[in-house]
Structure formats: C-alpha cells, structure tokens
Image (tube, rainbow, N blue to C red):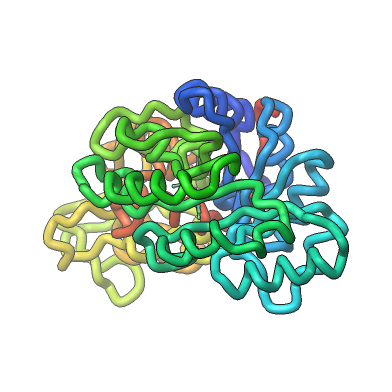
Length: 372
Ligand SMILES: *Cc1c(COP(=O)(O)O)cnc(C)c1O
C-alpha cells in the first residue's frame, strides 16, 4: 500500500506551484506578483511553499497572522511580509524584530502604529487597507479620504494601499466595477503609494487593473480562478488513499454508519484508508436520500467510483462495481484529488469550495514534496 504508515498520501508538487506563480506573474500586466501563504499556504505547508516561491522570484508574501509571518521569515530571510489581519492591541512591538509589516485596517490600528513609530523614532512601513465593499476589514472610503489629509501619515511609511475584491471570480457581478472605481478614487488621494487590488480571480479579470502588486492565493495552489472556464493553472496537489479491503455485498444490504446507503443489486465495495479525521469532508457522504446531488467520488483504475454511505473518521467506502474485478486489489490506491478530479470539483461534491478542501488537508497524511 504505498504508504507503509497506513495513511493516505498527499503529494505536493512545488515545481507546479512555481510554474503557477510564473503564469500569474506573466498575466499581471507588469505588476509584482505577491503570494498569499496564509493558513499554512492553504494547507500545503508554509515553509516549503514560501521557499519554492521565493526561489522562483517571489519577493512579497501575505499571511493572516503574525505567527505565520515568522514562519515565512524563517524560510525567506529577505522577503517583504504583510500580516493581513493587522494589529492586535499592544502587538506593535512584535512586528519589529522580524521586520514584518502590518496591514492597517481601521483608524484605531493606524493611530496605534503611528504612535509606535513616533516612540521608536522610525517611519516603519505598513499597508493601508481600504474597504470597498466587503465590510470586513479596512477603512471605509470616506475615512480613507480623511486619512489622506491627516498629518498622522507622516509618522509611518505607507508602503502599500490595498483593497480586496468581493466577487472577482463572478465576472458578471457588477460589484467589481464599483470596487475598482472606488479604489481608483482613493488611490488618487494617496499619490506615490503603491497600490494592490487583485486576488487570484482579479488577476484574470479583464476589468481589474493589476496596479503595482497583485495578491495571488488559491490559483497558485492549482484552484481555478475562472470558474466555468478552463483552469489556466496546473494541479499542485494529489491525494491518494490505499484500499484496505474489498468485499461483495448483495441486494438490499446496508452500508456504513446508520445504514444510510443500500446496495441496489450485488455491489463490490472497496474500503479506503482515509476519513473525516484527515480533513476529508463528511458532507461528501453518499446516502439513499441524496436525490442525485453530486457527492463524493474517487478514481480507481482510471474509473470514477462513487462513495457508498457515510464518510467515517478513518475510512471511506467506495462502490467499485464498475471497475473490472481483476483491475483492483487490496493495497491499490484510489485517487481522491488528482487526474480529472480537481480540488474545485471535490469541493463542490462536498457542498463547499476548493479553498476549504485545501485548507482542511489533514495533518495525518504522508506528505511528499516533489519538484522542489
Ligand atoms: C486571501 C486573500 C487573498 C488571496 O485570495 P485568493 O482568492 O486565494 O487569490 C488576497 N487578498 C486578501 C486580502 C486575502 O485575504
């Protein structure tokens, strides 16, 4: 069974990650292409991902937390690193030793950072986050104009003016054009400060300027930034689990916890060594009452096979009836992510998105980094 440890095997292709970064850089209209490596590089491992991206030429990284920023700093001594979640009260001093920059997202954070800089006697760099429609982080547009005229700006170094798109993957959504227009107006008040608006989908959205820097996340890791169209990105993640047992069940037999799946006719089942304790969503369970909603599948011997019954903690049961008997045996591997089964499809089959599939990738997998 491939992994003698018994668990599923997660293969992460750092060469494909670097290729995706180059693809996005080349499509960014001359803007610098920064990498968003929050949440452990979307579940892939922050140190190997950041090191591979830095080796490809990436110079700027975004994370959510200061602890993540420190991990990037360890992997990349000279990178520029921004913390998207900004300043927690009293945390200013913690940014200093590793030269990490906060993304200031409220007037209070700006006051705190400016006061810290005055006390240090240094104009330390930080990004300013403008809210153009998310209502999550960032200064409202009116506050941004006030800030542009405020002498407090002289106390620190505004190194980046940024905002975040609400729905860039949905090219028909008019909110993007409104966000671009608002950001444009604010940018005019912060002359000389580099600007950044696009996430992965924004980079590939014709209506979103790249400005000085784009912030690529999901697409780097192989997710499709253009849903409904061909994915311009290469796959980075492959997930395979070993077949622990094969068995035949007859018509009417119930399968899995609570017997929620019933064999219609004689079926052949394969039990896989992977479950929700590995981060594989239990929402992908296939039950008699699904009513045809797309749910979990895996690939065995080149064929798509549906799950049978509930995803359990450490195991998933697969209906392999359609695989020729001699094409599958105990110890073979089933593909849960890979070949034509993309992270986006796996997400949809669990009622979620590829982003959550990636960031849920389990800690128990036998992780193999290739192409580094
Ligand atoms: C997560 C995040 C990104 C990256 O978004 P993707 O859709 O993964 O490319 C960019 N900017 C901000 C502010 C983010 O929070």
